[in-house]
Figure 1 (cartoon, rainbow, N blue to C red):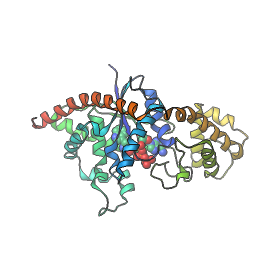
Figure 2 (cartoon, rainbow, N blue to C red):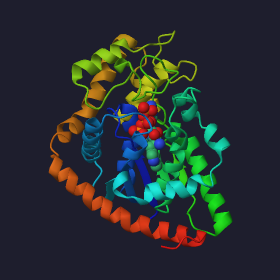
Figure 3 (cartoon, rainbow, N blue to C red):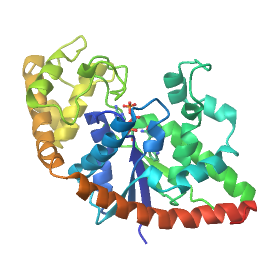
Figure 4 (cartoon, protein in one colour):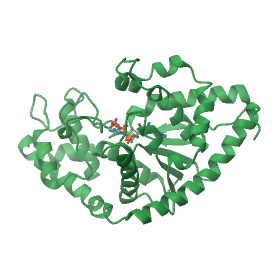
Length: 326
Ligand code: ATP
Ligand code: LTN
């Protein structure tokens, strides 16, 4: 039997190449060898305020992105989180065995909540519990994510182990799958920060829908570090990031990239990098418009039916072990 993978992205804002290279690219590659579920986690999105019409639109748009990137509904289950009510139900159960201290230690909560406990919603704190429910409902073996989600995954494992210890073997313990290169693509304007959807300055990110001119302009503006050599160098985070992007979109080895740019400077490197990214995104951008709403809605409906069938079995087991009869 194939092992199972589960992953998801939030339908908030536009996806950037960090999301693509850190997550989506691997999702597509893994769907051949694994039994895969890919979710649009709209219930996670509402941990920060959303405009209802925009959320509806973004949900379908993200499904289009999944399909254009190469997720194949005949091989993978593609669905919307809120279409499977078991996610929210299991999240409640798990929240009762999760400790407040564990959640308060999560760096994403600290970053997004900014310590403002009077104003910040409780959902931002309990967000990782819902994420654990997403994963555990499907008896997931492997979770392909970017580096920023590693801590949430460790918490998910702790919660699952605690439940298994208290109520008997119920959940499979999932492993993270974090790519060696691309797990944390940095902002073009600040290589100390990850490229982020929630960044107010659009010039720090290359969005999957950016046109050729915009991509070239953004790379030309990208900050650089001191020194001129185009090499991988941990002590020069800006060039390290740009060269990593180049490597991943061209599918070259690190060594090939360095040899290719030997003796060249930023003046040649940046336009070549922009060209490589434009070419990489071209097939995706051509495809993404071709999926109409009705087609996408049907795929999501079928995905939700398949997902519900798996999720219901796990939740029933959880309830019966806890003495909750339905
Ligand atoms: P934001 O960029 O606002 O922090 P997010 O991380 O919440 O957005 P999601 O759509 O939920 O965005 O993430 C989808 C996937 O993309 C996750 O697996 C996440 O780890 C990955 N990811 C996000 N940002 C990056 C990045 N800069 N580099 C690599 N992977 C990333
Ligand atoms: N928290 C993730 C999105 C997410 C997820 C998941 C990823 C929600 N549920 C389950 C993997 C598995 C994020 O913000 N990127």
